[in-house]
Image 1 (cartoon, rainbow, N blue to C red):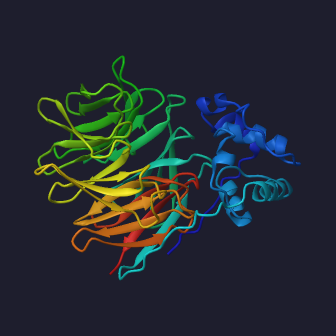
Image 2: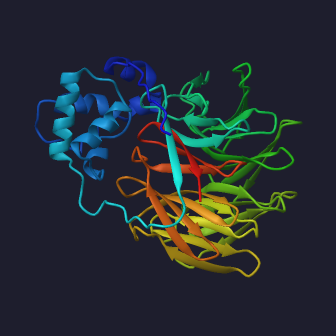
Image 3: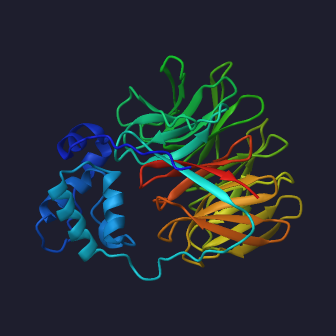
Length: 412
């Protein structure tokens, strides 16, 4: 069941002036990028840099005309004649590149993927979070708001953040129904009360910045990673924040998960290592990976506390056994260039997304038979940076560049 999608009628000038964050507006055009001559060139150079740098175009994997039209409709609302001109220009000069088709693996499992468009165009949901009632939260990073969709009715709602340019990144719902999120651009952890819309802000200490991914443990403590090489935690009862520094300088704790013993584990995206945190002392232990060029991006755990990760640049799904110290790896179906990213587990089954192929691909890996199965994401996915499992065995995805969130219902 695919819910009906409605766009938000925002004209280009309104998007440039009001919707997009300050850092995006300040990016400016990249003088090294010279677009081909054509009627909409000037408009593209002015409008596109409000959201991303111009090098997105030559570096992108390209689209067909239909693909460019669908993508642009999630970013900005244009008059028909201008939209046709822009779409034609992009399809001519930046067509879909060869070698970007996914390798799809058939299998016995059936899935249904439903998607909903964020009301604010160009908000680019970064992370999703399942709610206890079956709805989905998302972090509208470029629109400075937290979004919510009722998956039963398709009704969406957004909560604008008072701190300008917060850059909401990751988020998670706690046992009280509050939503914790990371203000990536403004170095704070936020707690949204959906009943009132009020946000409580927790500023990070000096030297700790760019909070990344939050998670809540069984005691209600909120843990989070930071791009500055730290793992932090907040006790909601006392509002006390504690910060632990990774042993290696320049570390970048990224995705985070908590095992059955209450120990947070994370992946270091700037290094070939994993890390675990002692939940009492806060001491971090690092585990070097066997390949120097590994850059694990997201993490998930199976019931045996094995650590599963997506090795983004190498195209592998990996497993680390903390008990034996053994690593094992499996090449993703679409190969070394597949860029596996968001990952989650449901029981002993690992789910993740290949973010390079057009469209992005949802992949299932059965850890008992060591077999793959995969499906294309209907909207294309637009780089699924994170995904999470629901309590009732479903998956929620953030389809970033296509401005959507998705729900995956799994059959047999």
